Length: 469
Figure 1 (cartoon, helix red, strand yellow):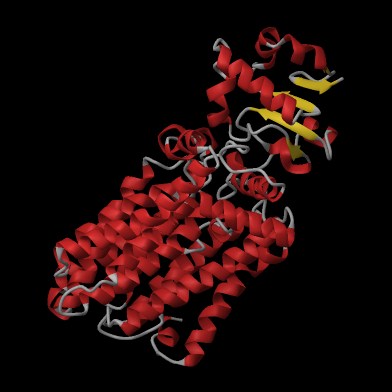
Figure 2 (figure 1 turned 90 degrees about the horizontal axis):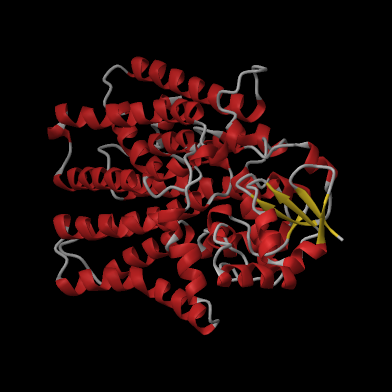
């Protein structure tokens, strides 16, 4: 397979797209298990489509540009998981082709091939959750555009005012996935160390980064919701942690081979320093900075799943490309790549389709939407779920702004505060749920603090479930 993609021709371009599509075809036809984050994104898009304002009327930490994308998806396809996978594949195809285009058009490698794109396509399929239209996938698209503009500056005698685009793209990436804001550090260091950028051009980069964010702040200021934005988005990056949703076994299994290939490619550089010209060595150093920045983002992740490590894919594919192009014996490279390809497909399909019954490797079991007695009983109702597991929303609608439990704690865990009780009461009055599913033992205390709510609800035969009278 490597020998075929070593040729830089139109047939390889088409074959790369077909390969990506064929890899994902089984779960494009039959979507894999719905994950809690996916359900959360679909619910946010649905709520925005109903006229609610993110952060003010929907308490969630989803970044605003991603929220707009899910709103548009809801307008076009409704609450469709399949649409997320189709759109995710379209975005992935763009990233694969653009990454390969950058590697060839800028002569980042000694030879122009489709191997970088092949590796990028493979590593984007390290787990089935990487195929969905996630905020991280959207964010990585803009980071790739920033990378393309950055290396274009390095290929010239001094930087130009196009460095504004670098900051602008990173800002759009941030508005898709907030931890991507760290990449402004990557951009500033890269311009400082590897280009002749002046102080004015550094200022343009920072301004390009700040401009969309300032527009966002202005929009929420004019809607008298700046405090909601700060609490539910800006501060949430340090507060929202759902690590109990993490499947560490799947995470390690999915990341091991891509990280191993990237590491081998990096180590290969130490014995092939004379093969690369000065520009190519600077690109390699920029990619090292990319990896370091992506590592910093791990501590800001709301949960740990393979989809959140898509930020690493451009750098891993870049260094893995160096590794596979360093072989003098191509038959050996083919054998290693075939083993890598087959192993990753086994992990991918085991997770998406459970090829081996009773084996949960790759399934992301803790992240899956659960089918319980409560979820089977309640259908097409307006409900409030108090707790981290939002599976009950799958066949129901969201009532009140309290979608994200980590943010809802601001009110619901603070019921000794008079203002919090008033806030909860007002939200119930404006958008009363027909059912309350209490997984955190909050409701009884709430009813004590707000007798009017206690009079409006009654217990059902199911523990922790309350029905409106």
